[in-house]
Image 1 (cartoon, rainbow, N blue to C red):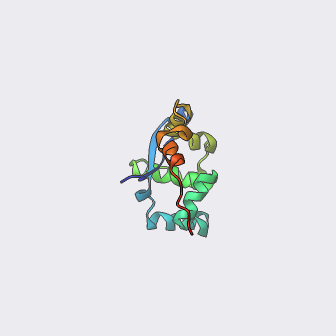
Image 2 (cartoon, helix red, strand yellow):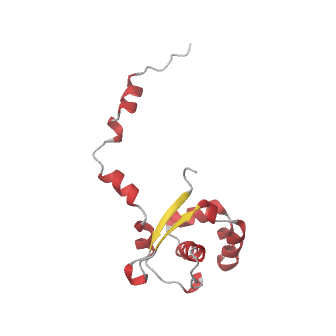
Image 3 (cartoon, rainbow, N blue to C red):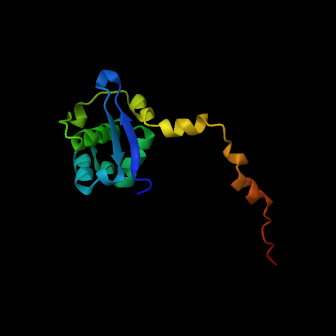
Length: 125
Protein backbone atom coordinates (compact mmCIF):
# COMPACT_ATOMS: atom_id res chain seq x y z
CA UNK A 1 0.00 0.00 0.00
CA UNK A 2 1.47 3.35 -1.02
CA UNK A 3 2.14 5.66 1.85
CA UNK A 4 1.97 2.84 4.40
CA UNK A 5 5.26 3.70 6.13
CA UNK A 6 5.22 6.91 8.09
CA UNK A 7 8.82 7.03 9.31
CA UNK A 8 12.06 5.17 9.57
CA UNK A 9 13.44 5.53 13.06
CA UNK A 10 17.16 5.00 13.59
CA UNK A 11 18.62 5.19 17.05
CA UNK A 12 22.15 6.53 17.31
CA UNK A 13 24.93 4.01 17.93
CA UNK A 14 25.09 5.20 21.54
CA UNK A 15 21.48 4.00 21.93
CA UNK A 16 21.99 0.65 20.21
CA UNK A 17 21.88 1.79 16.56
CA UNK A 18 18.70 -0.14 15.78
CA UNK A 19 16.49 0.84 12.85
CA UNK A 20 12.71 0.59 12.87
CA UNK A 21 9.86 1.48 10.54
CA UNK A 22 6.65 2.98 11.85
CA UNK A 23 3.68 2.11 9.61
CA UNK A 24 0.15 3.50 9.70
CA UNK A 25 -1.19 0.03 10.37
CA UNK A 26 0.95 -0.18 13.54
CA UNK A 27 -0.96 2.69 15.13
CA UNK A 28 -4.03 0.75 16.21
CA UNK A 29 -6.90 1.67 18.51
CA UNK A 30 -5.45 -0.21 21.48
CA UNK A 31 -2.12 1.53 21.04
CA UNK A 32 -3.73 4.98 20.87
CA UNK A 33 -5.73 4.19 24.00
CA UNK A 34 -2.49 3.29 25.79
CA UNK A 35 -0.81 6.50 24.60
CA UNK A 36 -3.82 8.48 25.82
CA UNK A 37 -3.56 6.90 29.26
CA UNK A 38 0.12 7.74 29.46
CA UNK A 39 0.14 11.29 28.10
CA UNK A 40 -3.39 12.67 27.73
CA UNK A 41 -6.34 12.82 25.34
CA UNK A 42 -4.53 14.31 22.33
CA UNK A 43 -2.38 11.17 22.09
CA UNK A 44 -5.49 9.06 21.49
CA UNK A 45 -6.27 10.71 18.16
CA UNK A 46 -4.49 9.31 15.10
CA UNK A 47 -4.11 12.58 13.17
CA UNK A 48 -3.16 14.53 16.28
CA UNK A 49 -0.59 11.90 17.22
CA UNK A 50 0.95 12.07 13.72
CA UNK A 51 0.95 15.88 13.92
CA UNK A 52 2.70 15.70 17.29
CA UNK A 53 5.36 13.46 15.71
CA UNK A 54 5.87 15.95 12.87
CA UNK A 55 6.20 18.77 15.39
CA UNK A 56 8.87 16.86 17.30
CA UNK A 57 6.83 16.26 20.44
CA UNK A 58 9.08 14.30 22.80
CA UNK A 59 6.31 12.16 24.29
CA UNK A 60 4.97 11.27 20.84
CA UNK A 61 8.43 10.17 19.69
CA UNK A 62 8.86 8.09 22.85
CA UNK A 63 5.51 6.44 22.11
CA UNK A 64 6.53 5.79 18.49
CA UNK A 65 9.83 4.26 19.56
CA UNK A 66 8.09 2.17 22.24
CA UNK A 67 5.65 0.86 19.63
CA UNK A 68 8.41 0.02 17.13
CA UNK A 69 10.46 -1.79 19.76
CA UNK A 70 7.41 -3.70 21.00
CA UNK A 71 6.51 -4.75 17.44
CA UNK A 72 10.12 -5.88 16.89
CA UNK A 73 9.78 -8.30 19.82
CA UNK A 74 11.96 -6.23 22.12
CA UNK A 75 11.13 -5.23 25.68
CA UNK A 76 11.09 -1.43 25.50
CA UNK A 77 11.40 0.93 28.43
CA UNK A 78 8.21 2.69 29.35
CA UNK A 79 7.98 5.89 27.24
CA UNK A 80 7.98 7.99 30.40
CA UNK A 81 11.54 6.82 31.12
CA UNK A 82 13.07 6.99 27.64
CA UNK A 83 15.74 9.54 26.84
CA UNK A 84 17.23 10.16 23.39
CA UNK A 85 17.84 13.06 21.03
CA UNK A 86 14.49 13.69 19.36
CA UNK A 87 16.12 15.77 16.63
CA UNK A 88 18.55 13.00 15.70
CA UNK A 89 15.82 10.37 15.62
CA UNK A 90 13.44 12.59 13.61
CA UNK A 91 16.05 13.35 10.99
CA UNK A 92 17.48 9.84 10.82
CA UNK A 93 14.81 8.43 8.51
CA UNK A 94 14.82 11.15 5.86
CA UNK A 95 17.23 9.50 3.40
CA UNK A 96 14.67 9.61 0.58
CA UNK A 97 13.94 13.30 1.21
CA UNK A 98 17.67 14.03 1.39
CA UNK A 99 18.16 12.26 -1.94
CA UNK A 100 15.52 14.50 -3.52
CA UNK A 101 17.25 17.61 -2.22
CA UNK A 102 20.63 16.42 -3.51
CA UNK A 103 19.23 15.40 -6.92
CA UNK A 104 20.08 17.35 -10.05
CA UNK A 105 16.54 17.58 -11.38
CA UNK A 106 14.74 20.82 -10.68
CA UNK A 107 11.04 20.01 -10.23
CA UNK A 108 10.05 23.42 -11.60
CA UNK A 109 11.63 22.62 -14.98
CA UNK A 110 10.24 19.13 -15.47
CA UNK A 111 8.48 18.31 -18.72
CA UNK A 112 5.12 17.98 -16.98
CA UNK A 113 5.22 21.47 -15.50
CA UNK A 114 6.48 23.07 -18.71
CA UNK A 115 3.73 21.30 -20.66
CA UNK A 116 1.15 22.63 -18.23
CA UNK A 117 2.54 26.15 -18.66
CA UNK A 118 1.95 25.95 -22.43
CA UNK A 119 -1.70 24.98 -22.10
CA UNK A 120 -4.06 27.85 -22.09
CA UNK A 121 -6.95 27.93 -19.67
CA UNK A 122 -10.39 28.09 -21.17
CA UNK A 123 -12.00 31.50 -21.07
CA UNK A 124 -15.42 31.48 -19.51
CA UNK A 125 -18.04 33.70 -21.13
